[in-house]
Length: 308
Image 1 (tube, one colour):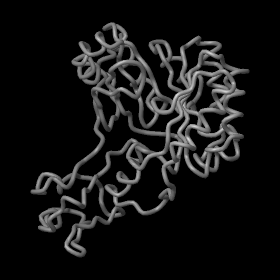
Image 2 (cartoon, helix red, strand yellow; image 1 turned 45 degrees about the vertical axis):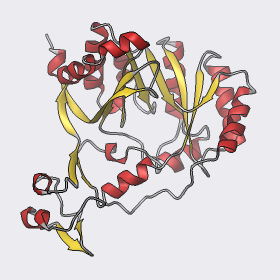
Image 3 (cartoon, rainbow, N blue to C red; image 1 turned 135 degrees about the vertical axis):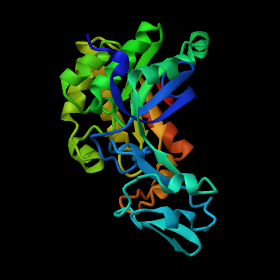
């Protein structure tokens, strides 16, 4: 018999005391890998399964210790700071322990489902007192369906409320297994127009909308809609109306809508990966604009809030 605890996968963060990824106080597990390429992504380090090297330039003293130990000769000093040629770097990690300023860090590692469940269960006292639980986020849970399923099953067996946050882009057989031990689905809606969705994420939205309906109708799972509000991409009254009509007509009035204003967390992470390509040029939406979008959705009788 398959031992769920031994199933392994890739994660890049485990965040305790999270209050924006479902009800109550939660522990959020961030899984590596994502099939989308959203240019506003707040977790760009999650795009692939491979670990990433983070470099905090603000900490660097320019001592050169990393330069001397790099086996690929990928690091040099420029203007008094270390600079890494990411085409040469193989993320071996040799530079991390020698940095006296702790300016370098490897993000992403392999863990077993048992290790993750044990880490989550250390916070169970907070879950029990607040109605919280565990949320699997990413990245994308559908990229590691066996690993995700195992973590959820172990947590559910221990009496923990379970949630997933998903972009919805994946086959139904992957979804159905994960949903067996999922109490709540936090479902991302990037754009209701498929052409615009593909422009912003790299894929159309037909499968995503189909899966949303199947999760609610067939799997009968509780769902919340999460909409990242990206200026110049999906922050229009037309898009909010299309979203609301989809929820009212194809899902249910019980689906709560969360409008999530764009923020710059992803920009700082791109800086840490010394990445210049594919950077978003946008300002976070104003409070007034967010309220105007909230009013559009509320006009359909839906429960809608700004934020997680």
